[in-house]
Length: 432
Ligand SMILES: NC(=O)c1ccc[n+]([C@@H]2O[C@H](COP(=O)([O-])OP(=O)(O)OC[C@H]3O[C@@H](n4cnc5c(N)ncnc54)[C@H](O)[C@@H]3O)[C@@H](O)[C@H]2O)c1
Image (cartoon, rainbow, N blue to C red; front, side, top):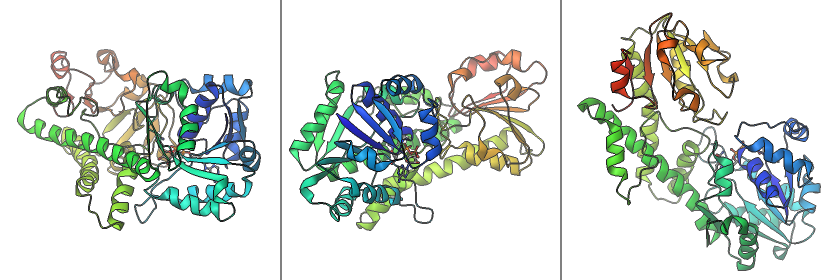
């Protein structure tokens, strides 16, 4: 099939490359000229394991093309995916749909034959209706159909998630169009992905409800972890014990820092705002948002306590700063509040992240990026394991702390408390 992917960020680029790999011709359009230039030179603007090889292969075979020319891409395609960002509006907490609406208006100029316009961006309920209105200003309604196809891939596992999704959701009010999109996804459906079709508004809400539910699971276990710390109980045993109940399930029940990333924080906020505007109080989701905010404070307080309230001049190392491993995405990572707080209090921060240096910390006082874990842990008072990169799962701490003894605060519970104690380390973790 001939596809146009508008917005080649984490979702758009992965989806485009994987659709091309299935044999489709995919035009990728982005307004960011530097991104398109990089892609045309076979450079990948984001960090996503396995993506480079797929992009390279399909670019060479000319199934994957990169351009800033929307007209060229739209006129040569039958299915147009909108994959632009929907961040939180600065003052209102609702989703900023200006990118989605701008793209809808722009593409509406180039509808030369029947087009399926698919929203992959996460958007509030009834956004599809609004896109339809925008496109119909210039075109007869018979010339296009607007569909919702929410994306569930996770950064860091995006290729695998695209190829082996739990489900593919298509929200459309037109059965012919649903059938066409089912055909597009047929190679994945034949490998076991569940195809679920529904109306457009339901598909839009499925995405928000799924993210709100997952965020709730994380916040729930984080609060239980707070209780465990008070009563000398291991939260991991609680996670296993409750997760074995099939009605609950074990995934997303690992205590740790506040949830972050480009989706949960903004989608939970946008969902509650949408519901408020429809005079429906989603009180559970609102509590989750508050609980997650508080989580950042609780963990920072714990760091203070570990350091006996003496932060000034303390040397603190962060292992990992991204919100999760295998991505360079810093959006809403809990390190974004922890590191500036500690730096402002006079701590000397060193950080190492396998995805590289982060510009967001470059203006902070006494905060430096290290190119290795060894360098980051040299001569420090406290090592904080912030992100669960594989590299941090089997550290030889005895070797690292040869020059100076340091305390370890493991926010991901990567090590056994008992073993660390036995080896003589001052070791703190979460909910244990
Ligand atoms: N990142 C994830 O893990 C994930 C997972 C599921 C769903 N989503 C949703 O997918 C959407 C995209 O997320 P992302 O993380 O890929 O965003 P992103 O910020 O990485 O990428 C968005 C891209 O759109 C481009 N863009 C903006 N306006 C444009 C325009 N007018 N014309 C062409 N290109 C334009 C930007 O330059 C950018 O490259 C969001 O709605 C997000 O909520 C994201």
